[in-house]
Image 1 (tube, rainbow, N blue to C red):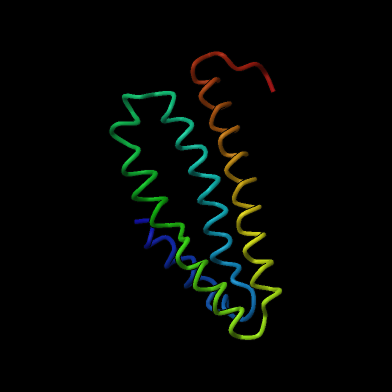
Image 2 (cartoon, rainbow, N blue to C red):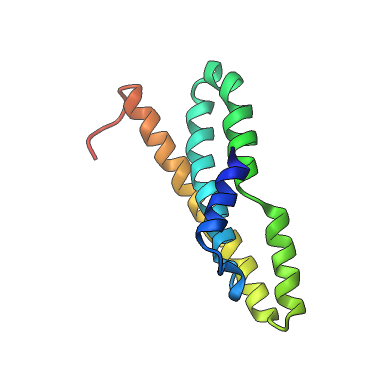
Length: 122
C-alpha cells in the first residue's frame, strides 16, 4: 500500500525529476513525521504495537519512504554536474526528516496523553 501511495504521488508530479527531487523529499519528510506519530502511539500501547507496528511502520510507511531512491538521486545529481544540489539534497533530506520525526514524536505523545486523560488544554 505504501509503495502504491508513493507511485500515486509520483504520478501526480510527473516533472519531479527536472532538477531537485522534490517528490521524494516530500515522501520521506512526511513519512518521518507519520512514523514519529505512529511509533510514539504504539510504544505507549504494547498490545497495539505487537499487532500494528509491522503493518504501519514497516509495511505501509517503510514502503512509502525510500532511502535507496534518495541515494540514487544524489548520485545522479552529482553525475549530471550538480554536486552542490546533491549535497544540499542530502542535507535537506536528513535535516527536514529529523525535524519532521521530532515533531511527529511530540505530536504523537500529546495525542496519547490526551487519550489517556493526562493532557492539559493547549
